[in-house]
Amino acid sequence: MSEINTVVPKALLVYCRPGFEPDCAEEIADNASCDGSFERGDGWIVFTPSEKDPRALNSLVNKQLMFPRQVLLVHDRITLGGKDRLTPIVNSLKQIDSAFSDIWLEYPDTNDGKSLSSFCRKFGDYVAKAAAENNWLQPQRVRNRLHLFFPQQNEVFIASRPAKDTDWINGIPRLRMPVDAPSRSTLKLLEGILVLVDKPESKFREGMSAVDLGAAPGGWTYQLVSRGLKVFAVDNGPMKGSMDGHHQVKHIRDDGFKFKPKNPVEWLVCDMVEQPIRVAELMAKWFAAGNARRAIFNLKLPMKKRYLEVCKCFALIEAKLEKAGMSCKITAKHLYHDREEITVYLTVVKD
Ligand SMILES: C[S@@+](CC[C@H](N)C(=O)[O-])C[C@H]1O[C@@H](n2cnc3c(N)ncnc32)[C@H](O)[C@@H]1O
Image (cartoon, rainbow, N blue to C red; front, top):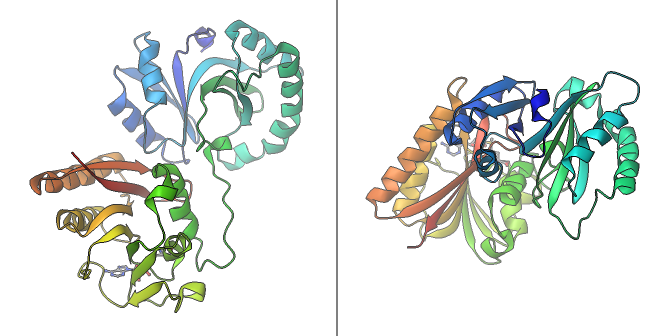
């Protein structure tokens, strides 16, 4: 792919959970303004559009896509044959002749990829030295981050993107497990809030009410409680640890598909393991009845045609809410803490 060696990016590099490369490709193809070809790696794909229009790539980089963990503009791809890995990278960057806010060295989220972590750490020192010598780092002036992605030790993609606060190295968030949370799935809702909700501190405020469907043992409830919300935790199973008997939590042993709140709530969250279309219908029902204004929920993914299934669920929600005279905004992400599911944020849009 040596023709990529130019200032104008000609391809897109996308990181994802290994095994979800076809879903990423389907979503990119569906959102791209032109056709193109895909190369599939393990935990990454490259999209090369057939038209030489950088706007096609720039618009994809700035889009909120579900399956990609990270989307980058590719400037070059180099095979690093000899012992000196730095010089070819320096030479390539001199041709790009650009300044960056930061430089990240990255690798795929696979066992082979993880074996490159110490190499990237050590090699990063040499890259930092070269960056200082060439004045590549100008964080006060630019927001563009340089990503050096090593699919293997002797190959590197030279790529960049406009830096975002919610970017993480390798596309993987490092979130600390709260010691008093009753389950690790608390990290899933935490990541969902950080990634999907704009200015979360204004959307989760003390005294607001929430319903958590499929709440036990209480990891999601914990996130809501720690933001000051009062939670109706609906599950036939027991709440555990700090969420068992907490003064902000009312545990209701009921079927999440039958439970109706006495009063509307600000937040609805749902982590029930169910058919995605049933969950989508349930969310639409709550919103159409005016029983919730915001929701975060999981859609379990089928083994095949996952992108299509998610699109069907979104279409159902939009149609039901349109029928109820409402418009809504749906954003979704295949989070690092998601496996065979996707996390969705649904809000009512005021006209
Ligand atoms: C993945 S766990 C939820 C974990 C929880 N979000 C947490 O962070 O601790 C799924 C939960 O959904 C509950 N569940 C499944 N179907 C349900 C239903 N129809 N009504 C209520 N709860 C249900 C299960 O009992 C189980 O506790």
